[in-house]
Image: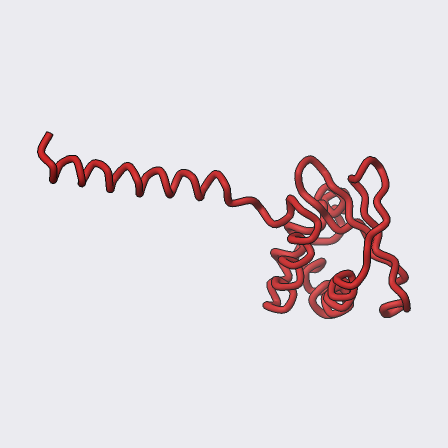
Amino acid sequence: MKATHFVSALIVFVLASGSLLSAETTADPREKLDTAITEAIRLLEAKEYATVLQEYFYMGDLQNDTTVSFDEILRIFANKKASRLLKALKATKSLTPVMEDKGKKATFKFKEPIERAKSITFIKIDKFWYIQN
């Protein structure tokens, strides 16, 4: 094999290996509690409310209520709940959660209520963390 063909083949192999490796090692931020919270904060600050609802709330719970459309849930969330959730998530950064259910339930208890909320709880379903309350 000529040197130029070898170098070209090596470059292709390295590029292909790098993209395969990065695709395999890129974890969803919801797989770990701390990165799930950080990503949820980022999404809320960017006003990506639909993504927050779809990725951080277990949709099985929301789909049971067929009387309210997703658009209506989104409107209510954006107007009334998103800012409170953002405050609550930011407050978790200085707290240690109480872990239950073999590490699949994490509750952060606030030192002072955030708009009447005394805590926020996350549950792990399969490999992702979701906001329970």
